[in-house]
Image 1 (cartoon, rainbow, N blue to C red):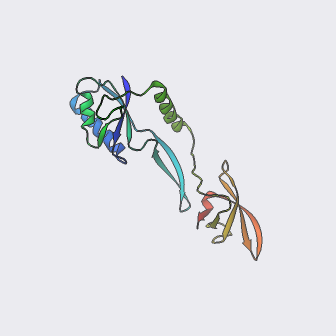
Image 2 (tube, rainbow, N blue to C red):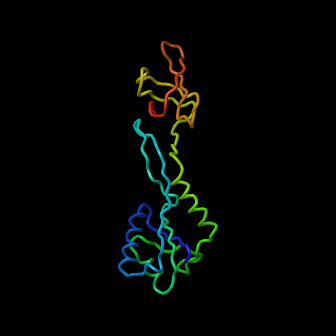
Length: 177
């Protein structure tokens, strides 16, 4: 069995995987298609002061399939709803299997994402002005002086009575203006 890349309609990767699984089940070709994978990573973003987790596709518009492409198997996979075709060297040509090095890297990356803790996308930049939404300085505007990614804290400067005051808040206590 080799790994192949199926091109699918963007945004419909998960739905296409379920269509392929149903088709494999219906036709009884489980021996020829062993794994279907949509490589994703968990991304954490801060929206409206709340931490929101979201699964993001590594390769939007592509699905990895471990299969033995003999007989009608390639045609069955190509004709599933939302599938555009196999990734190959020529259009409509023979599907090209992925190299083992590439697969190990992708699967390794997928496994790492399952093990790693949260990765917060930091939507803030040093020098940016933000609005404090929590604590005693609620509704004050502050300028970001420094960002501590490990502690998920911001070093801010708030102007109070014409004087700058240093302040340390976490990402959840401020929002973009």
